[in-house]
Image 1 (cartoon, rainbow, N blue to C red):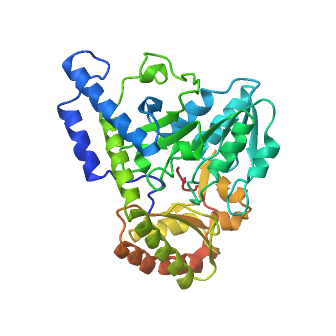
Image 2: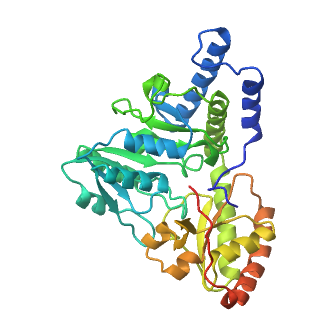
Image 3: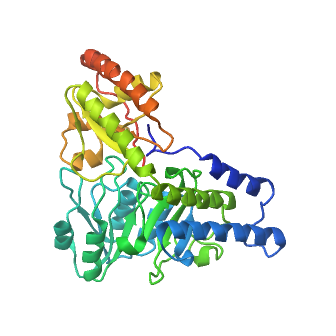
Length: 387
């Protein structure tokens, strides 16, 4: 139940990739038959990803994953003297780029969030300046699953003459993504969050956006992302996009939301002094983030892992020092609750039986960790919650 960290490869995705590794291994930039077969496979995948996002195939740039997509969007647009607006709850793939840009002479504003992890339109309006070039706010938070009002934020951004980017890495495959309806100019996705292989991703770049390449080499991806294409990975991402689109049009989202709600509601009923972080806001269908009072998350993660249940802690290790999650801190949680929070993120393969098994394991583990908690000193490390 840690699908927000990564998802398994769907069998159909593996089947689509296997022939590329064995038979269709040509370089997509070569003009001979093997190369053109690889190019055709990349083009078909580009069409599939574009169909998932409701954009033109020419607006899709394939990358090595979500981190590169986020980096490309920010570094490819901003120069010293420009102003970037982002939020305090972004993934580090955006936050750390923003900090680097700040060191290079870009003005950066980090918007606060509400206790439910929402970015308010009024806060954005107050932060906009004449030199604002780009606003970057994630669509769905990787820790809480909370969905942001992207269309409203994008509309205010465009009214000020700036561009809007959204990190949709945790939304892809869980929400219908329509770049026209969202109103964004750039949008990032990652393959391994949507049952494609790790090391694949894409960036939607609207056709009117002038984006500099942040890498140097050949003229791949229309000169926007040099480097020989990862053909098998791209084919896998394309197949995962097709499967995601079909799943979103089925009863899949409602069924997964019902599983998540079953897990969440029964945990709240079975265990005392537990609450939902961001529970009053709209969330992606697979995610819930719970605080367990009188519990150190790392100890609970380890206890659950020993019983076969994989979840994620809400804290990250930075510079060798234990720090609470920046997302939960921005929401106003104190250190104790931030350090005692767990993220449960279900996959499309989870079943009612899985949820019920987790519900048998969790109360016992929580009781045990609470029983021995006074014997624990502050842990020397914390598990990383990944986007």
